[in-house]
Length: 475
Ligand code: URA
Image 1: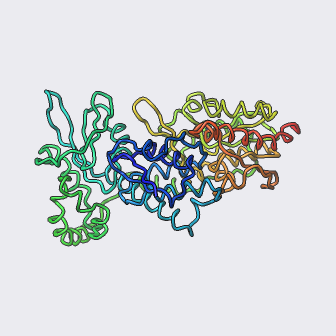
Image 2: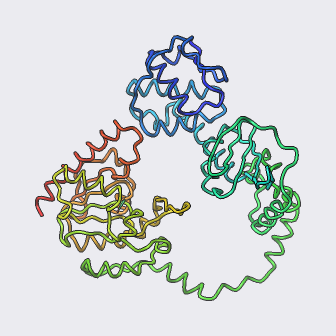
Image 3: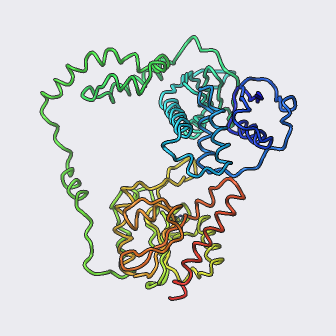
């Protein structure tokens, strides 16, 4: 058995490097033992001075590794290496198999890590300090797993304009003058909190605490007692739990509040099903009407709705997910980075974009503002379903012979069903009097971190489009 050393604070990259060397040396999981410690690399001593093996693994495994390495279980590296070994051996569907104990254990570890990240985001409480004459917000948090690196970007996003430090028993994360750094563990601070901030948290908690929804067991499961010491509002819990029964009685005895003005009218309007037109409206009428779309809240922050574009009776229609940042500004589909990949692939497949009608399942850009950026957010199933109103009208007006769904959201918008795109891709199937073909979304190709895999997937995308090409010729 060979002992493979890993750094104490082993990251996904550290593990990947070590595991690739083990693979290059053809060491089976039974032959290696991963040992976490702060010893320098012992690869020379262990004879693993070999070039790390290059290996293509599914993207889901990369994500899994990034989480599982943060788990506190001792067997986490051995578990990941076993999975990697089996993936290299060509086991298909391994990670998704509910009957495989290793795959399931890794999924449980990843879930526990996700939960711990969530708790860190929710339960960190900063206190204001002055260090070297500058304001610094400090917090102490005791996560169950080593989630500091995973959780830190959230705080960077939220609190980018203040200097802060989060200390934990296994390391610290500091954001100072716009730079994020990680340091060694810190000692638990003796003095906790800050009076002003503590009072704000308490006031917030008092106003949001609903005695009628009190479930003490669920509350403690959600907010483990380990975190209570650093959360000022938890000092209110005993008193509020004690008073909850009386407050519920008082609430029940109080006469009902009068609903705000217009509430009934608004509720009735929301409940109204969208009216289906009797006969197909022409595209220019749809384009006018969609400007006033209020079927879901996405119209609020978006610049404008983006309807499809192309010949009004194109024989081929492409359906994407939703407009992105550039599409939202331009009012045209697929003009941003995903559009460029799409155009290149179309050209390689012999499809002239100007002969196709190109649209999206959702007509408004859904995003989250982060600083000056607007970061794409996946539309919810409810939003996609609401927007089918427009997609169906576009299909009724254009009457294409073939519809190409680019990705799962497009399929949901078209069929109302979720499908496994990777399984169904590239096959032409009958669909409501025409045909349908599903392939991946061009943005998927942009997100692939591995250049070889991205090139391979791009080729597969072009091949799928080639299947659609004859329909374009038929126009
Ligand atoms: N992604 C889409 O799905 N549609 C666009 O229009 C742009 C990016």
